[in-house]
Length: 310
Picture 1: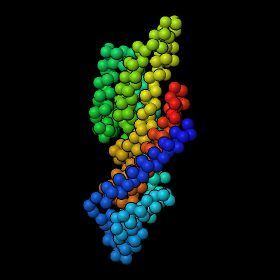
Picture 2: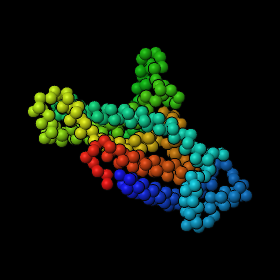
Picture 3: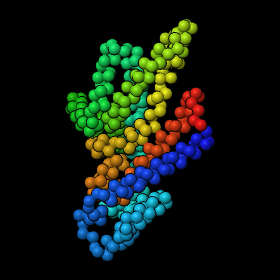
Picture 4: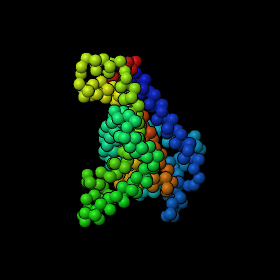
């Protein structure tokens, strides 16, 4: 177990290094001047900024400066937001994205497991047909469409009851989180539903399920102890990437619902060519994704004793 853990950590470090290198190369291919803003920058200040970030040096030298700062945990200062360090932006706004992501993941996991099990139990019948139609819809339709429809639904419901049951946008209370979390979790819930359905259908006709039924166990116990418990293992496998994808993938949802999360600032940084914010948030998101995948790989061995991680 220890050997496997060390091996996965080394692989994770290499992956993060590759992400940082690819991001650095991509940023240097983008046309434009990262120090060119709407406000005129005095030449002396411009030279100081170029010297601080190594923008007046060759690309290889800039790369080693960037990697050295990254190893020290310093992503620099935003070019467009006055006196704001990239580290402060990440630490202040990532918790907002994380809370929204956790709520969306709970909705997606519970709904995916429940609907996936139902479609398997009622295979080729009306519940299966309806749920799978909604699953295809959830996978096909972009999140910004669901976000707009969600806001429209809130407006209509508030007008119908003559009161503000749910806020249309903003952040601060649980009522602000409900609709964005539902919208953000729809795509993942649809994917988990399909995965759970396939896994359940494989297990329904397995030998140990037939043996449990032959022993006279109740259908409910067979479903919970033998079918659901084993069918959920593939879902656990993809939860790591799903957690990272939901937590870091709510860029559009955060913009539509005016949520002050990290994704919103990342989109603004791309629009404004904020070099340091783009680099810092991309590396942070990549490292978070790698970390969650490693955690799930390690937990998988505890969930399923048959798995030998070594």
